[in-house]
Length: 156
Image 1 (cartoon, rainbow, N blue to C red):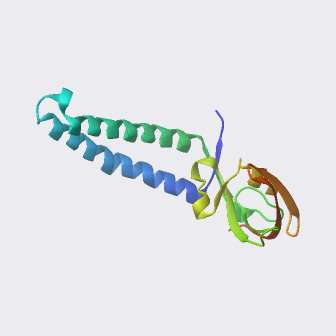
Image 2 (image 1 turned 180 degrees about the vertical axis):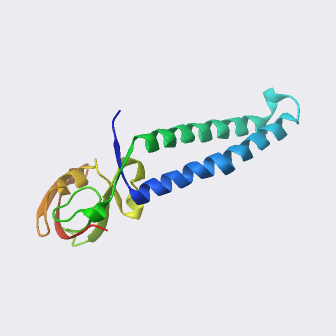
Image 3 (image 1 turned 90 degrees about the vertical axis):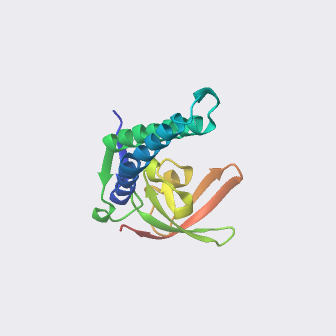
């Protein structure tokens, strides 16, 4: 079984979501299904079908989270230093637009670009890994090749 790298923060977020689904969402949807059943004919009961659909989504997400957490390998980035590796917070600058960005390289299940959490399997993360401050990397994307310079690397 393949291990999934996660940061401690990522593990805690996924664990909190799982607890909420099990303790709040699941019981609420069970009550909603019971209420919808009381309205009679299930074949034409939109509330019942919507509740069953939501229940299916919740149960699927619970299974997914349980699988991810069972395979999680929690990595503490504060124990690292030096070149870019998993867990590093990297400040880069686009060499064409001069736009600066900060990303933390994290596991796939916790990645969220809007929050600056970059999937370790993404082309940019793969290009950054192993590089040092001051290095330039070229990343191929659908919009063409982009060049970035690494301004700083932190492990926090």
